[in-house]
Image 1 (cartoon, rainbow, N blue to C red):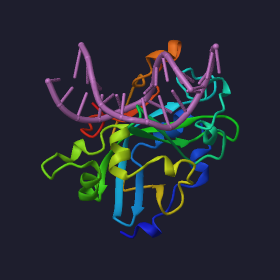
Image 2 (image 1 turned 180 degrees about the vertical axis):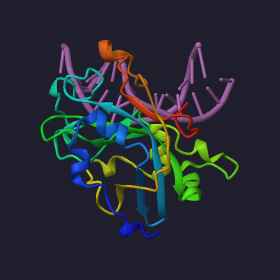
Image 3 (image 1 turned 90 degrees about the horizontal axis):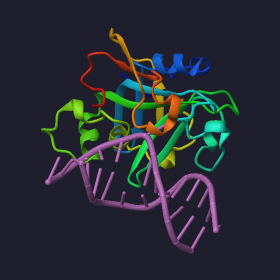
Length: 202
DNA sequence: CGACCGATCCTC
DNA sequence: AGGATCGGTCGT
């Protein structure tokens, strides 16, 4: 398997309803290439932040700040932000220009580079594989994703998305995590995950 | 410039 | 159940 030749998800993949894209991202591969080596994970959990009317969105009411700026740009670009001073979250811009919408990638199933993921997390070899990237900030640690990658186009070489070798799964759906402030959008079912997967967040 | 808080994670 | 830990954001 040569990652460099792996076909990136085409631009049209992102040019659909954010909920459809978020759901369709399940089973796709997220790949990272650094000097240290290559890391690949199958996306098993996502959340949609569907637009400026979404009260859970950082860009609610088209709030345009230095943090949210990339949400107003091109689709298929990384939106990486810091949280609780010590962690990062990785999102994919899925809204058209000037219409902020993103998919938060919450968990992946490690496919390649498992040892590198362990090293990046500072974990030893007896930590089970399903605990390496089962949360939005854990996967950022495991993949070495920091705010330096904010605004990066996801069809390049450093960090990109591609169709993997998808196995069959059923899609589960639930309310999004950690957005109790979002009033009537607190309970909408905009979280998607591979049902029965042990790699989703707890 | 000060104050508040978080799309989390880890430990108790 | 509570603490870590600090950048983003907003009000003064």
